[in-house]
Length: 230
Ligand SMILES: Nc1ncnc2c1ncn2[C@@H]1O[C@H](COP(=O)(O)OP(=O)(O)OP(=O)(O)O)[C@@H](O)[C@H]1O
Ligand SMILES: [Mg+2]
Image 1 (tube, rainbow, N blue to C red):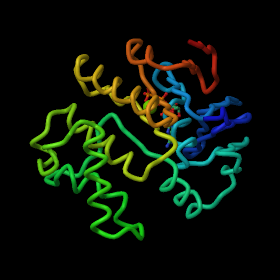
Image 2: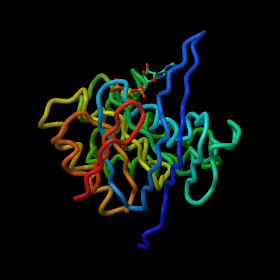
Image 3: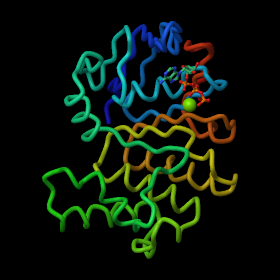
Image 4: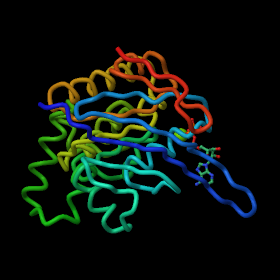
């Protein structure tokens, strides 16, 4: 596949205002991520990692600066347009899995398709396929509380893949897992990146997790202070 720029960030500034207080969570951040990249974002607590992920994921907008996703300026779009882009292009994985409790792996995975025009039959088919891709064949009808932590994170990854996104964003995806299970999840990410050419951006505190990335960027006070290339 050609080496297109998937994400272009130019001089992003994000200011949160709470009463009289202003927090400059991003402070003039510029960066480019190409299609098929696997990038780790590191940095101490409060350095702006999640803020950056929320903007890249079209969950929030920068206060200033430009964000081009697939060549399209998205920093100025309204909420509905952002939501549409999100549903079409982006999958999310979180530290706490964010699954519905007392609900099966299959139902959790189908969720993003609920509000699309895809038929129930097709949605089930896609969800089953997605679950098999993350190694959960045979666990489809288990409820969330009947799955291990690693399996729950796999369900969350299956759910994030069911829309066939070109971009996967994971904020501390192994933060609640033991190191062996965390490693298995990283192998899964690496395979998805290599086999399906999904661009992956993950936030992590863990050097071992960051090892799998092609590039690592370190944030401090809303700025990139260091970049490593593999
Ligand atoms: N919704 C918000 N309203 C106000 N301030 C916020 C908000 N979200 C984040 N901040 C502030 O912005 C800064 C960056 O926060 P952010 O959550 O991006 O950090 P982080 O690098 O993800 O930290 P952690 O490793 O603890 O998750 C922090 O000082 C935080 O207090
Ligand atoms: Mg965070």
